[in-house]
Image 1: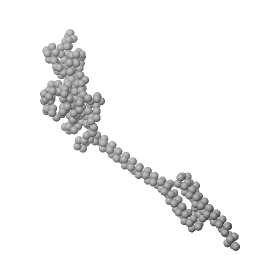
Image 2: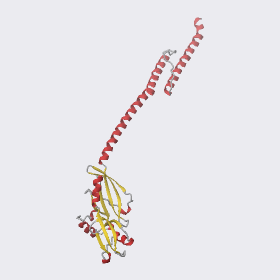
Image 3: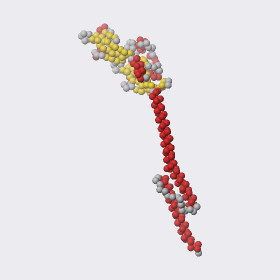
Image 4: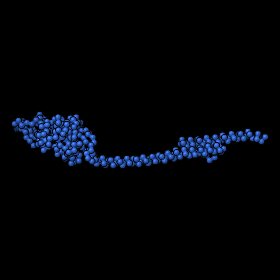
Length: 282
């Protein structure tokens, strides 16, 4: 808690003070002050006549909020600040006051303020914070050791509503991936097994409805041809069958054709015998 006396020229130019002075009301927001990056609330102080004589400031460093969120969610968090809105020396001073070292040169566009992990593959973000949608954006999947993380980032605004940085979130997907990976594998194996069973049923059906009738028809036609060639025109035993599909219908048609051919040949032979009969007797 800090009291600032406007009447003694003890004025701080941070956005929360400016907005509180302009509106005469409470103002709050995230700010990088002289000692920390914190959530600050500024309340005007008034004298007996209602004039603003100073401001009461309450600030809470936000570093521990990331630790609290990690404890609740087991995800990793990092806060980066837009370097274009900062001064290097100011950064050094604030980091030193917070017990942190100068890491200004580790980032190009953004500087890492705090993180729940030292793994930079999870915390780095060099995009433009001001261009991030309010709902955040996806940064893709990364692996860190034997863990798998989904990274995302969303902007954080200062007291004026301007994007001054971003929160990077790395959600641990390892257990979820393992759990659902096992289910996917089981589903895949079940699908393969089902496909094998369906294929076996299909082949069995194909054998019974297509190949077996074709083989039977082939055997009967070969037998009929051999018998016709040997002078057996009666073709007894090659019975007509009523079929209910194309293959069996074709088989029946061929049987009828062979019967008709046999009858024709027998008729021709009878006619020949009848014509030759008298000459044979004379």
